[in-house]
Length: 141
Image (cartoon, rainbow, N blue to C red; front, side):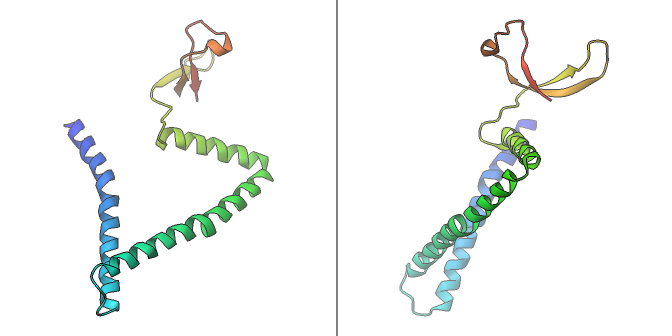
């Protein structure tokens, strides 16, 4: 039952954005056709397509790029904030990005003589590059 619910939610994640986008394009097409009477068949769809493409271009070049550049230049002036931002960004990309890095959670005892444990995530099981072959793994806490 849990797998069915999981598949249903994944299906929603795939179909809802497509459906909403399709509904928006259809709405725009009907708006253009109603706004300009006597428009030849299909020309409204071409106008909507061109309009959405222009918005995408403006959003990525004029709006997003300068804001990202300004934000990154601002972070370079504050090294502590840049470290925090890059750490949080990497962490979010690990959980949400295409290449998920934290697949296995573990408990880590911080001190040998303590019972206090923290939750960590295994990031690397192969420590040959560090010359460690003692059955240890790298853990992000």
